[in-house]
Image (cartoon, rainbow, N blue to C red; front, side):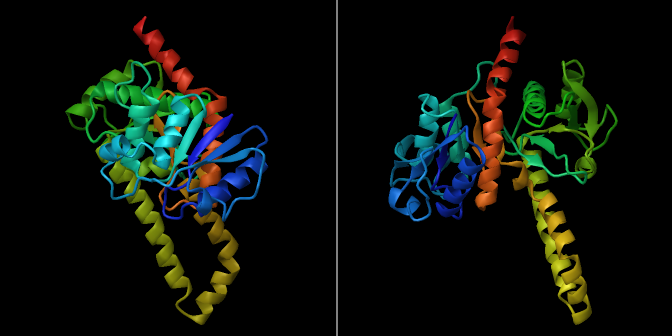
Length: 329
């Protein structure tokens, strides 16, 4: 399989994207990678490899660009060319750590939406205390949603959890302010009814405080709420480790303790890092499109490539399309 990577997207482009790609081709002998971006910059970090090629362009989409306008006007941007490679069958999937809105626009306008899916969803896998993680969707592709959109999110998330995460019967929860059936606003009340009748393992409402306890394998919500949950988890984890580090460095005795506990603390930090699970998939498109975190390092890119490889191998997009075709019959 061939994966196109927007090498110019992200805070540390192109170095970390290139290093992540080189690690991936060493680990997996069944993938080819196309690095899309400025050839001169990419060559500073690349090691010649028969399964790694460069598609040169000196145009890129910036974080400050207006997403839709940038995708339409910057036809030779690295992100757009990566998506175009997928649309034209030159690649099976694409990855970018660049402008999230632009990647969603490129996914919709260039790669294309699965027939029957009204709203694609942005879906990362977030950490849980037991290390299993859970899929949260949507986290920003749609600020508003209708009950039928949440149903489609649930189906796509369930397919992903089965095919990629290896969970035979994924538990699907509806994010709400309480676990009782009648709790919530009009959207969640209507969605509860729709999800209860769907061919998924729906376990009912779940509260945000229980997400990291592994209460569900797939959690669905509208993009506005999901984005706030995502950033709250990310910010809390980051600040908690800053507080721990500050306490551990406060005096000589705590520094000795920190030295003894460093391996355990690093393991906890790794467990709480959602980049270890890969990037956020843009579900509902004709082929896998993965959004890596803007601050992704080489390990995060490696994990995004590993995730993308599994999605392609297990035909996640095709399975979702097949399900939507059955629903229309």
